[in-house]
Image 1 (cartoon, rainbow, N blue to C red):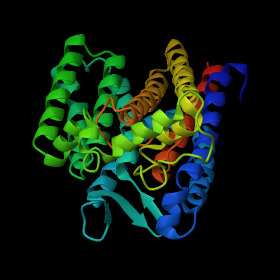
Image 2 (image 1 turned 90 degrees about the vertical axis):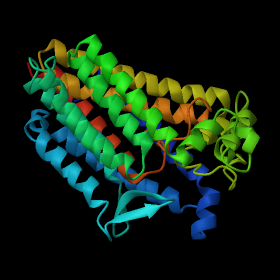
Image 3 (image 1 turned 90 degrees about the horizontal axis):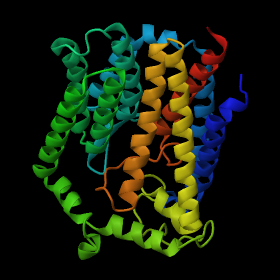
Image 4 (image 1 turned 120 degrees about the horizontal axis):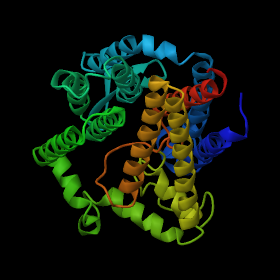
Length: 367
Protein backbone atom coordinates (compact mmCIF):
# COMPACT_ATOMS: atom_id res chain seq x y z
CA UNK A 1 0.00 0.00 0.00
CA UNK A 2 2.91 2.34 0.75
CA UNK A 3 5.58 3.37 -1.72
CA UNK A 4 8.29 6.00 -1.84
CA UNK A 5 5.78 8.72 -2.75
CA UNK A 6 4.13 8.25 0.63
CA UNK A 7 7.28 8.96 2.61
CA UNK A 8 6.47 12.69 2.70
CA UNK A 9 3.39 11.76 4.76
CA UNK A 10 4.44 8.64 6.65
CA UNK A 11 7.88 9.81 7.84
CA UNK A 12 6.73 13.05 9.53
CA UNK A 13 3.56 11.35 10.82
CA UNK A 14 5.45 8.55 12.59
CA UNK A 15 8.14 10.98 13.76
CA UNK A 16 5.58 13.30 15.37
CA UNK A 17 3.86 10.37 17.09
CA UNK A 18 7.22 9.20 18.49
CA UNK A 19 8.04 12.72 19.69
CA UNK A 20 4.65 12.83 21.37
CA UNK A 21 5.26 9.58 23.26
CA UNK A 22 8.65 10.81 24.49
CA UNK A 23 7.62 14.36 25.35
CA UNK A 24 4.40 13.47 27.19
CA UNK A 25 6.47 11.16 29.39
CA UNK A 26 9.08 13.88 29.96
CA UNK A 27 6.74 16.85 30.43
CA UNK A 28 4.18 15.19 32.71
CA UNK A 29 6.47 13.61 35.33
CA UNK A 30 6.10 16.27 38.02
CA UNK A 31 2.44 17.11 37.51
CA UNK A 32 1.62 13.39 37.43
CA UNK A 33 3.56 12.80 40.66
CA UNK A 34 1.83 15.77 42.28
CA UNK A 35 -1.71 14.69 41.35
CA UNK A 36 -1.55 10.88 41.30
CA UNK A 37 1.58 10.02 43.31
CA UNK A 38 3.21 8.31 40.33
CA UNK A 39 5.39 9.97 37.66
CA UNK A 40 4.02 8.03 34.69
CA UNK A 41 0.23 8.24 35.02
CA UNK A 42 -0.18 10.50 31.97
CA UNK A 43 2.55 8.70 30.00
CA UNK A 44 0.92 5.29 30.48
CA UNK A 45 -2.50 6.64 29.50
CA UNK A 46 -0.97 8.33 26.45
CA UNK A 47 0.42 4.95 25.36
CA UNK A 48 -3.08 3.46 25.69
CA UNK A 49 -4.52 6.30 23.60
CA UNK A 50 -1.75 5.75 21.05
CA UNK A 51 -2.60 2.04 20.75
CA UNK A 52 -6.29 2.90 20.27
CA UNK A 53 -5.21 5.49 17.71
CA UNK A 54 -3.27 2.84 15.79
CA UNK A 55 -6.45 0.76 15.54
CA UNK A 56 -8.36 3.92 14.51
CA UNK A 57 -5.83 4.52 11.73
CA UNK A 58 -6.16 0.92 10.53
CA UNK A 59 -9.97 1.16 10.55
CA UNK A 60 -9.89 4.38 8.52
CA UNK A 61 -7.45 2.78 6.09
CA UNK A 62 -9.83 -0.14 5.61
CA UNK A 63 -12.96 1.89 4.77
CA UNK A 64 -13.58 3.12 1.20
CA UNK A 65 -13.54 6.91 1.39
CA UNK A 66 -16.83 7.24 -0.51
CA UNK A 67 -18.61 5.66 2.45
CA UNK A 68 -17.99 8.85 4.44
CA UNK A 69 -19.72 10.82 1.67
CA UNK A 70 -22.76 8.57 2.14
CA UNK A 71 -22.69 8.87 5.94
CA UNK A 72 -21.71 12.52 6.34
CA UNK A 73 -25.10 13.53 7.77
CA UNK A 74 -25.08 10.59 10.20
CA UNK A 75 -21.61 11.59 11.43
CA UNK A 76 -22.66 15.25 11.75
CA UNK A 77 -25.80 14.39 13.74
CA UNK A 78 -23.80 12.06 16.00
CA UNK A 79 -21.35 14.87 16.72
CA UNK A 80 -24.23 17.29 17.38
CA UNK A 81 -25.79 14.88 19.88
CA UNK A 82 -22.48 14.63 21.76
CA UNK A 83 -22.21 18.44 21.95
CA UNK A 84 -25.78 18.80 23.24
CA UNK A 85 -25.34 15.93 25.73
CA UNK A 86 -22.62 17.93 27.49
CA UNK A 87 -25.24 20.27 28.93
CA UNK A 88 -27.43 17.56 30.45
CA UNK A 89 -26.99 17.16 34.22
CA UNK A 90 -24.73 14.24 35.08
CA UNK A 91 -23.40 13.83 31.53
CA UNK A 92 -20.89 16.62 31.01
CA UNK A 93 -17.81 16.87 33.24
CA UNK A 94 -16.53 20.31 34.22
CA UNK A 95 -12.77 20.83 34.55
CA UNK A 96 -11.19 24.21 35.35
CA UNK A 97 -14.49 25.97 34.70
CA UNK A 98 -15.01 24.43 31.26
CA UNK A 99 -17.71 21.88 30.41
CA UNK A 100 -15.90 20.04 27.62
CA UNK A 101 -15.79 16.33 28.48
CA UNK A 102 -18.15 13.37 28.69
CA UNK A 103 -16.81 10.79 31.11
CA UNK A 104 -17.52 7.14 30.30
CA UNK A 105 -15.77 5.08 32.98
CA UNK A 106 -12.04 5.80 32.71
CA UNK A 107 -12.48 7.46 29.31
CA UNK A 108 -13.11 11.16 28.68
CA UNK A 109 -14.61 12.10 25.30
CA UNK A 110 -14.24 15.69 24.11
CA UNK A 111 -17.15 16.41 21.72
CA UNK A 112 -15.52 19.57 20.30
CA UNK A 113 -12.71 17.39 18.91
CA UNK A 114 -15.23 15.02 17.34
CA UNK A 115 -17.00 18.00 15.74
CA UNK A 116 -13.83 19.00 13.87
CA UNK A 117 -13.74 15.64 12.08
CA UNK A 118 -17.51 15.68 11.53
CA UNK A 119 -17.47 19.16 9.98
CA UNK A 120 -14.62 18.27 7.61
CA UNK A 121 -16.61 15.30 6.33
CA UNK A 122 -19.95 17.14 6.19
CA UNK A 123 -18.72 20.34 4.49
CA UNK A 124 -16.71 18.30 1.97
CA UNK A 125 -19.78 16.22 1.17
CA UNK A 126 -22.01 19.31 0.99
CA UNK A 127 -19.69 20.96 -1.53
CA UNK A 128 -19.79 17.84 -3.71
CA UNK A 129 -23.59 17.63 -3.69
CA UNK A 130 -24.15 21.40 -4.00
CA UNK A 131 -21.14 22.43 -6.05
CA UNK A 132 -23.25 24.47 -8.45
CA UNK A 133 -25.05 26.25 -5.60
CA UNK A 134 -22.33 27.29 -3.14
CA UNK A 135 -22.05 30.70 -4.83
CA UNK A 136 -25.78 31.31 -4.46
CA UNK A 137 -27.18 32.92 -1.31
CA UNK A 138 -29.01 29.79 -0.11
CA UNK A 139 -26.22 27.39 -1.02
CA UNK A 140 -23.67 29.64 0.66
CA UNK A 141 -25.54 30.04 3.95
CA UNK A 142 -26.61 26.43 4.55
CA UNK A 143 -23.20 25.21 5.77
CA UNK A 144 -22.77 28.49 7.65
CA UNK A 145 -25.97 27.76 9.59
CA UNK A 146 -24.51 24.40 10.62
CA UNK A 147 -21.27 26.14 11.57
CA UNK A 148 -23.18 28.72 13.63
CA UNK A 149 -25.04 26.02 15.58
CA UNK A 150 -21.86 24.06 16.31
CA UNK A 151 -19.95 27.24 17.08
CA UNK A 152 -22.51 28.43 19.64
CA UNK A 153 -22.55 25.03 21.36
CA UNK A 154 -18.76 24.93 21.59
CA UNK A 155 -18.49 28.58 22.65
CA UNK A 156 -20.99 27.89 25.44
CA UNK A 157 -18.66 25.30 27.05
CA UNK A 158 -16.80 27.79 26.92
CA UNK A 159 -14.14 27.01 24.30
CA UNK A 160 -13.26 29.97 22.08
CA UNK A 161 -10.16 28.26 20.70
CA UNK A 162 -12.03 25.31 19.20
CA UNK A 163 -14.75 27.67 17.94
CA UNK A 164 -12.13 29.66 16.03
CA UNK A 165 -10.60 26.45 14.67
CA UNK A 166 -13.86 25.08 13.25
CA UNK A 167 -14.73 28.53 11.85
CA UNK A 168 -11.41 28.83 10.03
CA UNK A 169 -11.66 25.21 8.92
CA UNK A 170 -15.11 25.56 7.33
CA UNK A 171 -14.20 28.87 5.66
CA UNK A 172 -11.02 27.34 4.18
CA UNK A 173 -12.85 24.31 2.75
CA UNK A 174 -15.61 26.48 1.24
CA UNK A 175 -13.02 28.78 -0.34
CA UNK A 176 -11.10 25.80 -1.73
CA UNK A 177 -14.38 24.42 -3.11
CA UNK A 178 -15.03 27.62 -5.04
CA UNK A 179 -16.92 30.31 -3.13
CA UNK A 180 -16.17 33.79 -4.45
CA UNK A 181 -13.44 35.99 -3.02
CA UNK A 182 -16.03 38.49 -1.82
CA UNK A 183 -17.85 35.73 0.09
CA UNK A 184 -14.53 34.64 1.56
CA UNK A 185 -13.75 38.19 2.75
CA UNK A 186 -17.28 38.49 4.16
CA UNK A 187 -16.80 35.31 6.20
CA UNK A 188 -13.41 36.42 7.49
CA UNK A 189 -14.84 39.80 8.48
CA UNK A 190 -17.79 38.25 10.31
CA UNK A 191 -15.51 35.79 12.10
CA UNK A 192 -13.18 38.60 13.16
CA UNK A 193 -16.07 40.73 14.47
CA UNK A 194 -17.56 37.81 16.42
CA UNK A 195 -14.12 37.02 17.90
CA UNK A 196 -13.67 40.60 19.09
CA UNK A 197 -17.16 40.57 20.62
CA UNK A 198 -16.54 37.21 22.34
CA UNK A 199 -13.28 38.50 23.84
CA UNK A 200 -14.43 41.98 24.81
CA UNK A 201 -17.64 40.97 26.60
CA UNK A 202 -16.12 38.07 28.58
CA UNK A 203 -13.81 39.39 31.33
CA UNK A 204 -11.52 36.34 31.60
CA UNK A 205 -11.01 36.23 27.82
CA UNK A 206 -10.29 39.95 27.74
CA UNK A 207 -7.79 39.52 30.57
CA UNK A 208 -6.06 36.73 28.66
CA UNK A 209 -5.95 38.88 25.53
CA UNK A 210 -4.41 41.82 27.37
CA UNK A 211 -1.96 39.73 29.40
CA UNK A 212 -0.36 37.98 26.43
CA UNK A 213 0.99 41.32 25.16
CA UNK A 214 2.93 41.98 28.41
CA UNK A 215 2.87 38.72 30.41
CA UNK A 216 5.66 39.68 32.83
CA UNK A 217 3.73 42.72 34.07
CA UNK A 218 1.37 40.35 35.91
CA UNK A 219 3.80 37.48 36.32
CA UNK A 220 1.99 35.78 39.21
CA UNK A 221 -1.46 36.49 37.84
CA UNK A 222 -2.84 36.33 34.31
CA UNK A 223 0.67 36.25 32.78
CA UNK A 224 1.80 33.15 34.73
CA UNK A 225 1.32 30.59 31.95
CA UNK A 226 2.94 32.55 29.14
CA UNK A 227 5.73 33.95 31.32
CA UNK A 228 6.84 30.46 32.36
CA UNK A 229 6.53 29.22 28.79
CA UNK A 230 8.78 32.04 27.56
CA UNK A 231 11.28 31.41 30.38
CA UNK A 232 11.47 27.75 29.35
CA UNK A 233 11.89 28.62 25.68
CA UNK A 234 14.64 31.09 26.56
CA UNK A 235 16.46 28.52 28.70
CA UNK A 236 16.60 26.15 25.74
CA UNK A 237 18.85 28.42 23.64
CA UNK A 238 20.15 26.59 20.53
CA UNK A 239 20.31 22.93 21.54
CA UNK A 240 18.36 22.72 24.80
CA UNK A 241 19.32 21.51 28.26
CA UNK A 242 18.62 17.85 27.53
CA UNK A 243 15.68 15.45 27.57
CA UNK A 244 14.16 15.29 31.05
CA UNK A 245 16.19 18.22 32.36
CA UNK A 246 13.59 20.94 31.86
CA UNK A 247 12.75 22.94 34.98
CA UNK A 248 9.58 24.80 33.97
CA UNK A 249 7.56 21.57 33.88
CA UNK A 250 8.30 21.20 37.62
CA UNK A 251 4.94 22.74 38.60
CA UNK A 252 5.87 26.18 37.24
CA UNK A 253 4.39 25.86 33.76
CA UNK A 254 0.67 24.94 33.82
CA UNK A 255 -0.44 22.20 31.39
CA UNK A 256 3.13 21.28 30.33
CA UNK A 257 1.96 18.00 28.77
CA UNK A 258 -0.99 19.51 26.84
CA UNK A 259 -1.29 23.16 25.81
CA UNK A 260 2.34 24.12 26.53
CA UNK A 261 4.22 21.00 25.52
CA UNK A 262 6.00 22.92 22.73
CA UNK A 263 7.65 25.14 25.36
CA UNK A 264 8.98 22.01 27.08
CA UNK A 265 10.28 20.69 23.74
CA UNK A 266 12.20 23.91 23.10
CA UNK A 267 13.55 24.04 26.67
CA UNK A 268 14.88 20.49 26.43
CA UNK A 269 15.90 20.42 22.74
CA UNK A 270 16.46 24.09 22.02
CA UNK A 271 15.63 26.19 19.00
CA UNK A 272 16.90 23.41 16.74
CA UNK A 273 14.46 20.93 18.27
CA UNK A 274 11.56 23.36 17.99
CA UNK A 275 12.35 24.10 14.33
CA UNK A 276 12.59 20.37 13.63
CA UNK A 277 9.07 19.87 14.98
CA UNK A 278 7.78 22.75 12.86
CA UNK A 279 9.55 21.30 9.80
CA UNK A 280 7.94 17.89 10.38
CA UNK A 281 4.49 19.49 10.56
CA UNK A 282 5.17 21.53 7.40
CA UNK A 283 6.32 18.39 5.57
CA UNK A 284 3.25 16.46 6.71
CA UNK A 285 0.82 19.20 5.63
CA UNK A 286 2.61 19.48 2.28
CA UNK A 287 2.21 15.74 1.73
CA UNK A 288 -1.49 15.91 2.63
CA UNK A 289 -2.03 18.80 0.21
CA UNK A 290 -0.28 16.83 -2.54
CA UNK A 291 -2.70 13.97 -1.87
CA UNK A 292 -5.62 16.43 -2.09
CA UNK A 293 -4.45 17.89 -5.40
CA UNK A 294 -3.88 14.41 -6.86
CA UNK A 295 -7.43 13.38 -5.91
CA UNK A 296 -8.84 16.50 -7.57
CA UNK A 297 -6.82 15.77 -10.73
CA UNK A 298 -8.44 12.32 -10.79
CA UNK A 299 -11.89 13.89 -10.52
CA UNK A 300 -12.45 12.83 -6.91
CA UNK A 301 -13.81 16.06 -5.47
CA UNK A 302 -14.94 14.67 -2.12
CA UNK A 303 -11.60 12.99 -1.47
CA UNK A 304 -9.74 16.12 -2.53
CA UNK A 305 -11.75 18.35 -0.19
CA UNK A 306 -11.53 15.83 2.65
CA UNK A 307 -7.73 15.62 2.42
CA UNK A 308 -7.49 19.40 2.11
CA UNK A 309 -9.63 19.79 5.24
CA UNK A 310 -7.37 17.39 7.13
CA UNK A 311 -4.28 19.36 6.15
CA UNK A 312 -5.90 22.68 7.01
CA UNK A 313 -7.07 21.43 10.42
CA UNK A 314 -3.58 20.23 11.34
CA UNK A 315 -2.01 23.47 10.07
CA UNK A 316 -4.48 25.72 11.92
CA UNK A 317 -4.11 23.88 15.21
CA UNK A 318 -0.31 23.83 14.96
CA UNK A 319 -0.20 27.58 14.26
CA UNK A 320 -2.57 28.32 17.16
CA UNK A 321 -0.74 26.08 19.65
CA UNK A 322 2.79 27.20 18.78
CA UNK A 323 1.63 30.82 18.49
CA UNK A 324 0.31 30.65 22.06
CA UNK A 325 3.55 29.08 23.32
CA UNK A 326 5.60 31.84 21.69
CA UNK A 327 3.37 34.64 22.95
CA UNK A 328 2.19 35.56 19.45
CA UNK A 329 -1.44 34.61 20.21
CA UNK A 330 -3.54 34.67 23.40
CA UNK A 331 -3.93 31.41 25.34
CA UNK A 332 -6.61 29.23 23.71
CA UNK A 333 -6.33 25.75 25.25
CA UNK A 334 -5.59 23.82 22.05
CA UNK A 335 -3.44 20.70 21.79
CA UNK A 336 -0.46 20.23 19.50
CA UNK A 337 -1.59 17.47 17.07
CA UNK A 338 0.01 14.02 17.58
CA UNK A 339 2.23 15.36 20.40
CA UNK A 340 0.11 16.76 23.25
CA UNK A 341 -1.53 14.52 25.81
CA UNK A 342 -5.25 14.16 25.13
CA UNK A 343 -7.06 10.97 24.22
CA UNK A 344 -9.85 12.27 22.00
CA UNK A 345 -7.54 14.62 20.13
CA UNK A 346 -4.84 12.00 19.50
CA UNK A 347 -7.24 9.25 18.44
CA UNK A 348 -9.23 11.48 16.08
CA UNK A 349 -6.13 12.99 14.48
CA UNK A 350 -4.78 9.47 13.93
CA UNK A 351 -8.13 8.45 12.44
CA UNK A 352 -7.97 11.50 10.18
CA UNK A 353 -4.49 10.46 9.03
CA UNK A 354 -5.90 7.02 8.24
CA UNK A 355 -8.43 8.73 5.96
CA UNK A 356 -5.66 10.67 4.23
CA UNK A 357 -3.60 7.52 3.71
CA UNK A 358 -6.69 5.74 2.36
CA UNK A 359 -7.25 8.55 -0.14
CA UNK A 360 -3.57 8.38 -1.07
CA UNK A 361 -3.93 4.64 -1.66
CA UNK A 362 -7.09 5.10 -3.74
CA UNK A 363 -5.33 7.76 -5.84
CA UNK A 364 -2.83 5.12 -6.92
CA UNK A 365 -5.14 2.16 -7.40
CA UNK A 366 -8.65 3.37 -8.30
CA UNK A 367 -8.98 5.09 -11.67
